[in-house]
Image (cartoon, rainbow, N blue to C red; front, side, top):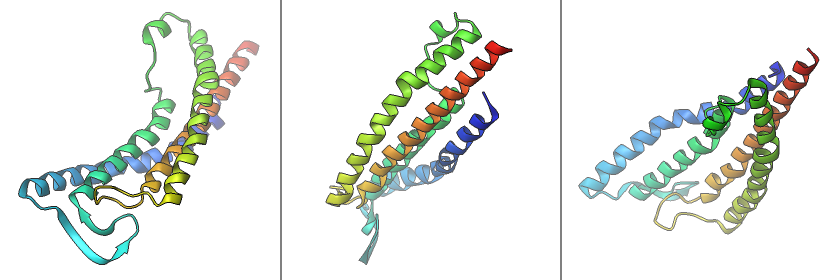
Length: 183
């Protein structure tokens, strides 16, 4: 793949690298949540003035919401890195029987005909989904985190990155195939 495409994919993977550090707070929130639930403690901290995202308290439900927020970020942005590093799901029994050149052609077609349109659709509708959440002020129904739109906005953002990654890899692979035909 051309060096430019590799660099673009590396830049698109930066959020995944940053988000990967949230694994430690995820483990900590699980640990605190389990201990708090076991001893019967629901409210871990509270205050008078609402704080964005947290509201007026940190509760066991806030920790549970935080856990799925972090997990969602890990999965959403990790998808771009999985694509770049070819750690995504593939039909290995089919692919292993093909020549290297045929594998590249199949990958190019898969990226440009299936991955990119699917991700573009998710990006488009995900943006509307997040906007509805923002305009309605959606929050947790169980005294958890108060701004659901924040995590819902990550859906179109991550799938937008995946769309760009698919385009970059698809065109980069196509360019490498074309260059191979000439050489």
